[in-house]
Image (cartoon, rainbow, N blue to C red; front, side, top):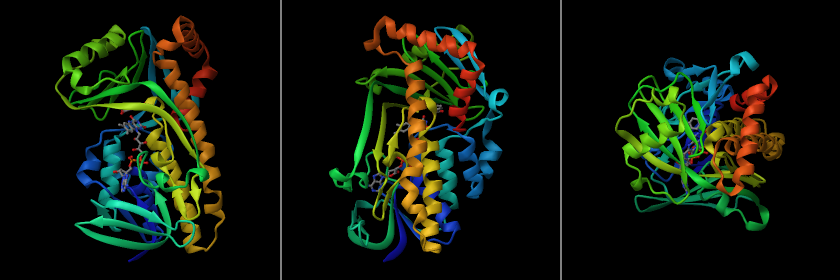
Length: 384
Ligand code: FAS
Ligand code: PHB
């Protein structure tokens, strides 16, 4: 079997790349280790930058987002009960779209015309420095695909980055001493916009998926287990960390999803190895505080798609030669903002009283400076 491009991973990065390539007439197959239902069952991001919104519309998959998504002109920050609304629209004329990653993935799956192999086991990539080929197992049969290019869209634990020789790649990492316990509930949101809260007990976030479905998070220790968190314990802890105004507006209910995500900052360099390219979580991880993970994956594959189309259709390597440096410039800016927002809003016991005073001063500066708020707005909405 031969395809021009083999994409490993049918998460948002792989599916969007496949969509952009097929619309340009480039033949790409996607190999996904899990089932489509499993991929859709992962509850993750909820906020889309304008660039991602534009990309979804350009790819012809934005209709449901436009019908069901909610544009947000700002967000609310709280620090030990003091509140600040950051007005993206007034500050920089930008907004964000609240529309869950699950729905983005569903829309991309529904639109896909090319071949996606779900349940592709033991995917292995070969000779990506020369004439690349990929093998995988499906229903007990081993398959081989010869190709021109391989796109590693297989997430942080995927096979592609792991297949690169150690001396050809450098990684940068910071693991945070806590995680996010997330709950999905079929109740109306507590506030019209997202609420990011710092409290001595820990960080909390009030987000949403629709007018009837909400998403909440609390910072928990890195070794915490979901089984130790009943719904009641979660709701009590969430409300303890919010201002009374927001806490009293939280509508509790039975969780329909509850999970703990670890937090880390991670970047691999470079992101091109011969005819293998890394994109999305395969290339980088950000703490979700800045709502960048999904959006960064989308900006990676927008660049990669143009580069691969240029290489296949116009036989020019200019785009693929520039891919790694182009996306890494944006990746590191997103890493910086996500790291900054995480440091502002979470409790870091190891930094002690001095660290908490610095966080308070950072919040007070933000509250008193329109320019500082505009900088936050630029970064949060992706206008960087
Ligand atoms: P993904 O991990 O989504 O997709 C990779 C795909 O590759 C998966 O379907 C996987 O099954 C497949 N794969 C892996 N190894 C394979 C192999 N060997 N062979 C074949 N297929 C393979 N971002 C935010 O902006 N906000 C959030 O709140 C947020 N919450 C998150 C919570 C969790 C628990 C996690 C893990 C991430 C979260 N993220 C969040 C980040 C997340 O949204 C990612 O940025 C986004 O899913 C990136 O998309 P992909 O790069 O496609 O990677
Ligand atoms: C979410 O809705 O899941 C979400 C929103 C904003 C974030 C992180 C997660 O910063």
